[in-house]
Amino acid sequence: DDWPQVAFAGRSNVGKSSLINALVRLKRLAHSSRTPGRTQRINFFLINETLYFVDLPGYGYAKVPDEIQRQWRPMIEQYLLNNDRLAGVVVLMDARRAPMDSDLQLIDFLSRHDIRVQVAITKVDKLKRSERARQIKAIREAVGSHAQGPPIPFSTIKHEGREAVLSVIADWIVPSAENPVGTEPQNREGEQG
Ligand code: GDP
Image 1: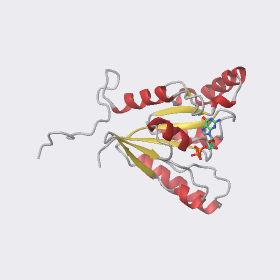
Image 2: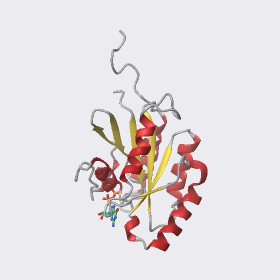
Image 3: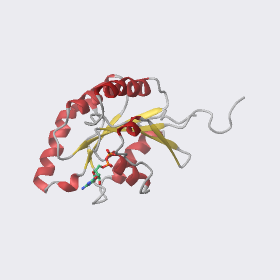
């Protein structure tokens, strides 16, 4: 159907389920499964009859055989490219790690196809203040101009970043001065014909 879609992507274990659950304030809407087979799906959650949160399968899951990993990429690319309801993609990166090639390749791919990107840096509570500033800077520099705004530090433990991520999502789906068209579905009310 026509609801706009906001997708979430990141390496396995980056904290994607936790972030989605924190955004919607539900404990187990999205839950990562330890069974690799189950993580291959693209899961759609309809939120308040307003938009979909789309949970993309985590990449780089060590226990998944190469053959299955090879199938993920075409599936995700197919989803991302043939989708005029896609409002943007939130790409998650772990605060404790250097940006991985797979993360940067995804962001580059999205940018090349004019898909909006917001980076969220997960688990920032695990870093000391000085490390935190250094990591945020490193990730910001690695992402460069591929994302529209600076990365958003996120922590489910410290309840940090929720409002900032929701605000970006709202900008993506609600028409505004900056984004006059928005991605509002046409003909949602008062359909013609
Ligand atoms: P997913 O595989 O990307 O969906 O990752 P999960 O949401 O299942 O999280 C992976 C692990 O990281 C779990 O043990 C979470 O409890 C932990 N985690 C997720 N977010 C945070 C956070 O903000 N802070 C801390 N300290 N741990 C987190």
